[in-house]
Image (cartoon, rainbow over all chains, first blue to last red; front, top):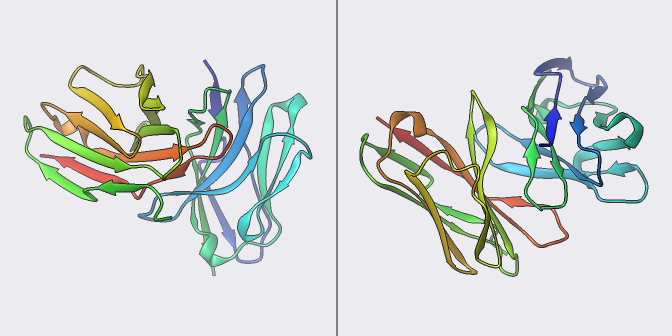
Length: 112
Length: 112
């Protein structure tokens, strides 16, 4: 069965610092990849997605992610974080069945 | 569009009682998913439907859990009898065949 690993469980950054959150998946076939954000007490919202084409995808709020097929990775990046980016971030994989397998999440805390 | 609508937002019930969670997917979406989120296990897929037909219910924890989708605009997740370990946030999500999943606000269930 496919799995998704997010190795950073809790990240603390100062405002304006750069962010990179790791995501690796285990599945040998074609995948669709997603990053979702969950603000405290809220539901999951889509940040960005990769289906095909340019492996560098841009999402909302200045986030981007790069799909590296050879590394089975889909890391999330943002050049300069803001206090309002404090949230939990989930990487997810769709192996074609449309249901998503989620990573365990990374809690990001941005200090002003 | 109002998005995925779930009710109730909060539910507190006593152990042994029946609990019914409700979901209205986004109009035109033909996939509907039920996820459960807990601190210990993260986001788990319970069951999903395509065109109102259950496709995979292997994530349903026990026979106490059941889900139905009688039409394209309504689904229920029922727990009977409920137990304290069922306490979690239950999310419903919907999508089309080629898009990202949109999540509802969730139902926070507490079984005492």
